Each structure stands twice: as structure tokens, then as C-alpha cells.
Image 1 (cartoon, rainbow, N blue to C red):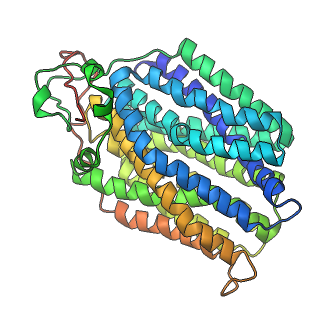
Image 2: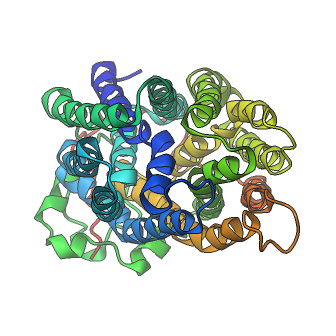
Length: 450
């Protein structure tokens, strides 16, 4: 794999950043419940607060993700990566200091604001960096390894959360988040996208056809770099594959957001699960995710194609939620968690498909648009699942089916599966094109978003 030294530093940075962000996930439900509904196992207010935070953060990310992706194309991946990695430290430090009600609400407000940049920003820029570093034919394996690193961070953070107390979890998260930012600034090197003269950006304007080099984006006024809805629509319509992949990404993200926000509340109400039981479930989940992304995807991707892996992952997500919703005993969620071996193939497959539809100077904005769509799904998800979860986990449920909202999450994956069947990858250039072979290395035209 090309630029292996740089990629190792990228993987370490992503690992540390995701470890810090994810290690708190298993404890945050208990912290939220103790802050707003002390002594209770069911709390509608906690569900609505979680949904509101997710919606506001997602709404901001819809605008910020394409912007930060476009700016990383212009100013470099490393410079833009510094922003989300620095901001992510602040809310973690608050709960590392204290977890009383007042400190929780301070964390809640700052987390809502910083999540607009942090939750998708690191991944968006990392995907652009990865696309800069490897040729198109090897990209599915590289994206799989990156997803495997994220899954590995999730696995290690879950194991750590199983061993640490709640107070120690937030202290460790804050320390690791600081270490990730420092490591990235010291060791990660910025790269210049390399391409040949046959490639032209999709969003290349008429007024700038004489400009060359992705660096020319830096000369454009900042506000003109903010992608307009027209720019986003033009990019999404650049190919049928891109358009369908965008719809699949929306339904996949809709389901993922529902799982992350409401599954633990469902298990807590249904089986009285707490931090240690959550940790066991996520430990199994991330073991499967790590195996699938680090082993299955690099091996199977080049053989059967990422579009097949995408369909498999989406259908596995539907089956996973079906089992959770019908869980009749406390051991069923543990069995269902093993379906994550296939479930986590979906997201990196979508990103790889989209990466092949744009040129080197538009990797950042393409991944940013994709994450913007995911963020929009994060806005819609709580509007759908918060009322459903609160209703069916309460005594006011119209019928006795506590897992109904979880089944509805699975239906979003099933719709994505149906759409994924029609995806046919048509790369921007032939698959055997090597973008790093050095043909006129500095001739990448600038995609101005004016």
C-alpha cells in the first residue's frame, strides 16, 4: 500500500480519537439518567434530551461537513483535522472533573455544539487523506482497514469501559483525546493530491479553467468555499451511482443513529441492563466489526466488489434489529450482536463507492457531502424514533411490543438494502488507472464552489 508510513500515523490518530469518543458511550446513558431522573430505570426526559442533542448536532453537521471537506481540499487535511480533534477535548474534560447535574448540563450544551464539527469531521478528513494516499484499485481494502481501525478503537474502548469506573472513564477519555491531537500534530504529514491531466473536477467553474493545482483553492474567498445547495445537488447528480449511494447512505445512517441513541434505553427498560451488560454487548459487536473490516473487506472487496458487500451489510443490519426487537430473553441480544460481523461492511463500502465517482481534488467535499447526508439522517432519526421509543417503553403503549421502535430501525436498513441492489459502480476513470504514477503531478484543476 502506497505511503504506508503516513497511513500508519493516520490510523494511530483515528484510533486514539475514536477511542476517546467511544469509551464514554457505555457510561453516558447511566450518567444522563442519574442527572435528570435519579433512581429510575425508565426516563422519557433522558430519551428526549438524547434525541434533541442528536438532532441539533446533525443539523449543524449538514452544513459543516461539506464545508470542512471542501476546506481540507484547499488548505490540507492536517490543518483541518486539528479543529475537530481540539474541540472534542472540551466536553470530555467537563465530565472528567465532575458529573453532578450542573456539570452534566454544561457538558450537554458544549457537546451539542462541538458535535457539529467533531463527530463526522475526523472521519471526513481521514477518508480524504486516505483517498489521496492510495490508488483507486486498492481503495476498497484501504477503506476497509480504516473502518477496521475504528472498530478496533470501539473494541478497545468497550473493553476499557468494562474495567473502569464511571469517573475513570471520563478521565481516561480526556487524556487520550489530548494525546490524539498532540500525536497528529507531531507525526502526521500533509499530502498533495496527485492526478493526471485527464481528470477534471465535477464542480469546476467556467471562470477558473486556467487555474491549476488543488492549492489554488486557497486563493478563493472563504465564504465562496461554502457549498450551496445547488453545488451539493450538482455533485450528487454527477452520476447515477453517486445518487443511489447517497440515498443508501441516508437510510443506513438513519438506522445507525437510531441504534446508537435508543438501543441502550430499550435494553435498560426491557432487561434492566447496565454499564457492564452494555459493555458485553458492544464488545461482541466490535469484535465482529473489527474482523469484518480488517479481514473480510480487504480480502473479499477486490474479489466480489464493494456493492455486494454493501448489500450484505445492510441486510445483516435488518436481521440484527429484528432479533433485538423480538428478544424474549436476556441472552438473545448477545446472540444478535454477532451479526455485526456483516453489518459493519455497509458504511466503508458506501464511502469507497462514492470515492470512485469523483476526482482527487474533490475527495474531501465528496466525503463531506456523504457525511452531511448522514448528519441530516441524524436530525430525522430522533424525530422518528424518540417518540416511538418513549411511547412503546412506557405504560401508554398502544400494544405490548417494547421492541417496535427497534424493528422500525431495522426497516430503514431494509429499505437501504433494496436500493443497494441497483447500484452498479462506474468509476470516474478505468480501474487500472494509477493516480500516483506522476503524469503531470501538479495539474489538478481547482473545484471552486462559487
